[in-house]
Every structure is written in structure tokens, then in C-alpha cells.
Length: 283
Ligand SMILES: C[S@@+](CC[C@H](N)C(=O)[O-])C[C@H]1O[C@@H](n2cnc3c(N)ncnc32)[C@H](O)[C@@H]1O
Image (cartoon, protein in one colour):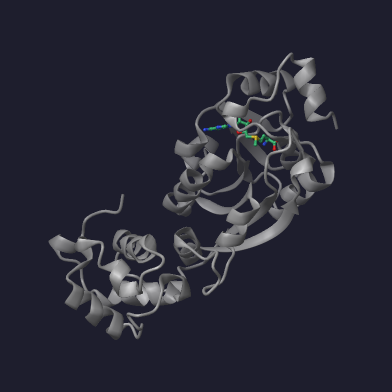
């Protein structure tokens, strides 16, 4: 396979820092990433930020139908000229993509090696569109993957770990050292695999309120749970919140990073049915 450096040279281009362009041309790694999705022939897969098309070729080789969404016009031009069989190239923004619409299918697999600053927007996007995303593999900063795959009690455990963990099983499937990329980024990467669960990890009454409970709980990591959670006035008074924590069997003096997703769900349920005052949507 032609190296990223050679493809760039052939098209008279350079990797652009502003687009987070660190290309992966390592065949073993690319094969492992494509394998991690376990694609079926003809299955629709959306690739975010395909760049020069290295991972794209491995995805297409599985027989899956690839829709590649790229924002840099130069990369779109390269992909159109390379015309990889089985691949449709779409000029668009990965952070706002409508997965089902772009792939023309109700349920898709997603792959992406994206600029690190897009990590949270993309993961929140997947959560929002989880009815249409059966699984995903993302190459991200190694620390971020460790955080997302962490268990409660681990210092890496955080907001997105809990929110994603309600609906997806998250695994760290591969470490990719910085030197494997062209040009090498400053930090090592890892590959996160998300597999949608058949049902949420625990029942909740309202998704938006669950998100607010978890956000408020992690808003002040050094504070106790009660002192942190009460920072969101839409969740109720301090007395209501203490009563909800007690009803959920959660000690108000604990810290957010020690709670399981199931315990956050129990707190949300203990807040009771929604009233107009508690039904503000999450941002
Ligand atoms: C880290 S490079 C990876 C390229 C390729 N997937 C690879 O592994 O070699 C990130 C890619 O995402 C593209 N990109 C950056 N921002 C984007 C956005 N908002 N939407 C879609 N693609 C984007 C960049 O132009 C670049 O091609």
C-alpha cells in the first residue's frame, strides 16, 4: 500500500495541522481496526475523516458499503481521484453528520480516526444517534480511550464513561504508538470499540435528566456527590437531592467517580416523575 507521504507527494499536498491530519499507513494496524468492526458483506459503514483513504480501503475490502465523510476539500479531491471501489465520498462535517441519512440505511457501523478536538462532539453525536449506530471504532488519544473504558473508582472514570456506558459496551482494542502516523502526533493513540447494548444498562425515567444528574455530579470532582450535584438547581432542592440519594442507596458523601452507571440511574429514578420544573432539556 502506498504510504501517506507518497500519496500526498503525488497529489502535491502536505498534511495540514489545522485539520488534525496525522495519517495512518500501517497495514497491520489498519487491518486490526477494520477487523474490530466485524463488518458483514454489504453492511453500511460510515467512515468519518477518511483522509487519504488508507482505512477506507481496508473497510471496503470487507465487502461493506462505505460512505466516507471528509471535510477537507483537498482530501475529497484525492479520494475522488483514487476512486476506491465500494466507496462513496461525501463532503461534510463529521461532527454534525446524520448517520442514517448519509448512509441511506437505518442502522450503521461507524469508523473514524479524527482530530482529537472532535472527540467529544463525535462521541456525543453517536450517543444522540444511538438508534442508528450499532457499533463504532474510533482512534483517539490513548488517555481518552483509557478513560472511556475505565471502571468506577479509577481516576480516569468520568462523565462520558457513564453516559456512553449506559448504552454501549466500551473496549480498548489496540494501542497505536505515535510513530505509526505521518506526521507523528505528540501523544500515543488507542482504538476504542463501542458496541450498542440490547437495552440500557439500567432503567431511567428521562434521558435528559439522567444526563444532567451525571454532568452535575462530575462538575466538581473534588467535592462530595451532594455538594457537586446540588450545583444544578433544575434537579431540585438540597433536601430533595439528599432524599433521592438516600432512596437510591447512595451515600451523599461519596464522590462521583466511585458510582456505577446503575447507581446514577437509581438516583435519576429516585427524583421521581418529571414535573415542568424538572424537565429542562440537557444542553
Ligand atoms: C487524523 S486524520 C486521519 C485520516 C485517515 N483516517 C487516516 O487514518 O489516515 C483526520 C482526518 O479527518 C479530517 N477532518 C478534520 N475535521 C473534520 C470534520 N469536521 N469532518 C470530517 N472530516 C474531518 C481531516 O481532514 C483528516 O483527513
